[in-house]
Amino acid sequence: MLLQSEREQVADYARRMIDTGLVVNTSGNVSIRVDDHVAITPSGHSYESLRDGDIVVVDMHGGIVDGDLLPSSETPLHLSLYAGDAEIGAIVHTHSVYATAVSTLVDELPAIHYQIEALGGPVPVAPYRTFGTPELAEVVAEAIKGRSAALMKNHGSTTVGKTMDEAFSKAITLEWLARVYLEASRAGSPSLLDEAELLEVRKQLDAFTAKRNEKLSSRE
Image (cartoon, rainbow, N blue to C red; front, side, top):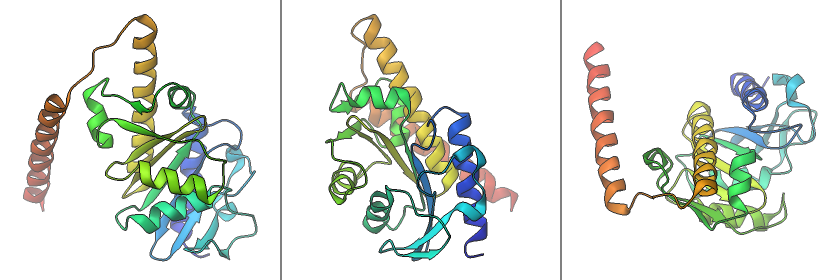
């Protein structure tokens, strides 16, 4: 089976989206890119019973290469993001409650907590476009430039990473940040981090990353 390992990952993380509450029913989708092929969740299939054989493999033009089901209706979105950034290896798109709620209220999820720097800073909200269309793919690709997350107005969220674990972790972080923002806004006017404070967060994250890499290298 073509891209068997990647299809197993896609099926596993699709089920995890259900377990973590990032999606309900068949909403949302995930994919992994390997060279010119993309393994992506099928359209309209229950994630709770999803298996690796249900995952569809498409080429970079959306043509089905392997699989018996139709690929996700958001395949154009995934392909657009992969085409725009060769560093992206996996994509998670959700209809999670808090991220979706925030997308209806603001044009940008602000820096409510320093962990937003892990997503590249404040998270932009892409304008509303009909699901599954090239127009939606275009506005999300524009919004996510320079970041690893974008909200989609009245729709949901999209996160990207080099690996599926990274993209999924960012989806969890984004949902948590959206919840913190909503809870704080409900209670009053939350304080926000400014660019200078985020710059210091960036420096601290870079320092910790360098130390971790140095430690790992010393083990080899």
